[in-house]
Image 1: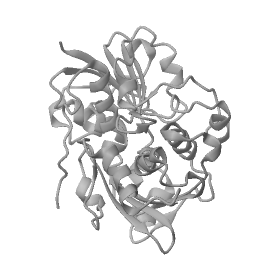
Image 2: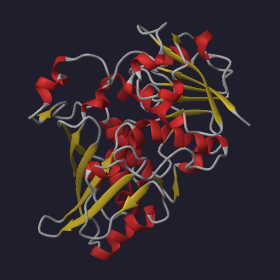
Image 3: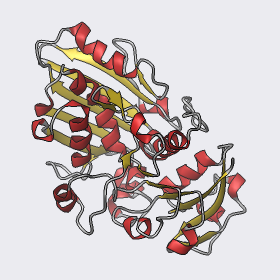
Image 4: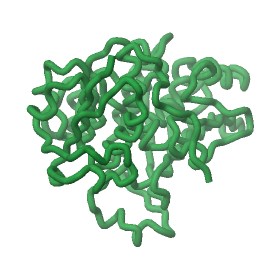
Length: 349
């Protein structure tokens, strides 16, 4: 069976990456692409790297245009998806790459986003430990999927095995992320100009204000502890690379866990996973190693002097962080091979 697909926000970074992956997917037909201010223009004008999709023209983003497809991807700014998802009740599968359907708490939504709250959908991070199972189980047959925030899924994947196994204390998590500006989207902003970023590292959303914090707390709570037991200090830093996240996350060692027990928690969680890989002891990833790939590579260190576990994780924010996770979740929901159209191989140099 070939599934018809519509992709909204197709002129942006996330929408373009969804299209790049789907263009190589043997089970889908990209039938419709939509945009707002760029509607009526050729897709190739805004995504010149997508040569195989040069025949497509950007339509206006409306419920009527998006309806009538088997699958709809929404790659819109936060707070804009809900107005369309409410009108797509007859669409068999809808995947939202924005934040509108990620959070379970109305209070968290009001505090970090604001505006209308929409019901949470199945979270699109298949490998995430959830108690004794994985989030993958909840994606099977799902009709509504919330793709993750790139920073949030990177940190959650980094620490969830330790939380689930009880070998780290989630009450004192500290994470610092080096991130590329493509995660902020294509909209013109003065702080994202090349003249502001090149040759500089720029912290932002410092002091607990980043919107991905409640998403991380929610994911780690599902891994094996209640939300009241989670406290996280989260600091992102813009660095001059177009793609990528390098997250360094630490938490105290809990329950007198031994080195072997700590490493076993991560090995048990990800030893059989294709797209989340724990590196050998003493090795740590670079963002260059995951460029263009749907992989999260992580290195684990045990700092006995500080009594903390250190996890360093690299992802491509546009692939495993967003579009790759969305397509991987789509494959699971439809009963297709999970890795269809997704690669573990990056691009180098």
